[in-house]
Image 1 (tube, one colour):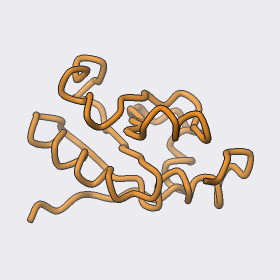
Image 2 (spheres, one colour; image 1 turned 90 degrees about the vertical axis):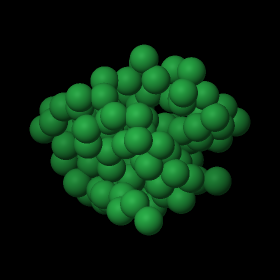
Image 3 (cartoon, one colour; image 1 turned 30 degrees about the horizontal axis):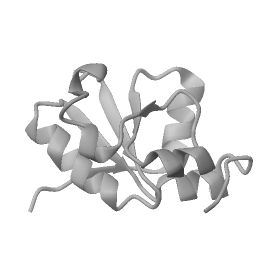
Amino acid sequence: MVAVKQIDVETLHEWRRQGQPHVLLDIREDAELAQAHISKAVHIPFEQLIKKLDLLDLELPIVVLCHHGIRSVSACIFLSELGAKDVLNLSGGIDAWARRIDTTVGLY
């Protein structure tokens, strides 16, 4: 089993405040994105990752998010296998972000 690095929403929030270079990758479906999203995230649904890999800078840390942080684990493993240097799973996903960082982000 491949170990997937985790990042909590508080650390991601600090990265964003400080301008820490990274890619925030939202792998949720379009309908989920319509309900809640984080600004400046790159949206590529999981099943389209292989086709749209060129939209990502694989040299930067990539923080992957989904609803609760479960599907994103699979995406992290996939991206690592494709050569991404530093891939992190957002623990708790957008749900944790909406509850602990930005309450204007919708819950679903």
